[in-house]
Length: 243
Image 1 (cartoon, rainbow, N blue to C red):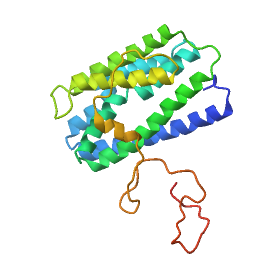
Image 2: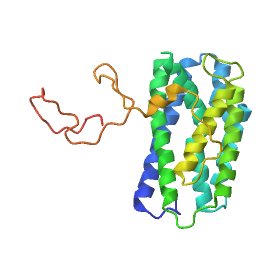
Image 3: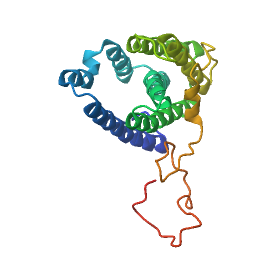
Image 4: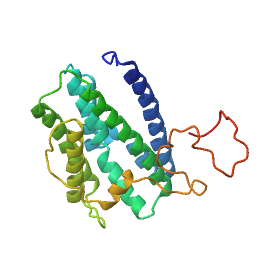
């Protein structure tokens, strides 16, 4: 944080920390709700110590946090954490959403995935402002290392094939996400993969949900008049609006 001198960037990281705390609380509540077996619940709450592939992901991220590498390298690494390390889990949960299963999990995940996408986009934006960028070979090295760890994670998580989803297709999806991240950082694609999951394309489309039936999963548009309609008689300034 002390290396970031742009006030707006420092402010963003403050918001990002707060948002990540909310995500942690949300996933904790989901585990409490869905997992009734106490031993399994304890195992999942301590996944960093109890699940080897999760341990690898955590160790990789922590290694970069304590690294003496350049700020540019760490920024790319954290873009990989936000953009790649969540991709397999998000995709699997959106597979449930496509089938209309577990609405509480899928809706909260939809909101969280938008936050993580925003964090990844911010890391890429901040990288474009750096004077001393990394050579493409170094960025590829960092990214491919993250991709291999995420592939191992999804192959272990998807030991059995599902309808429309298996470890091979998931690995292809991770390659696709990695290529998109490389382009966002200003470099050429590594894998040349395409998205094998049609439902993941729907994430970027504008939601058309009736607000009075269900909250939309996209961010509210920032507009003074956004909450007003022609049928409202009183336009009142409020301090408790849900933005």
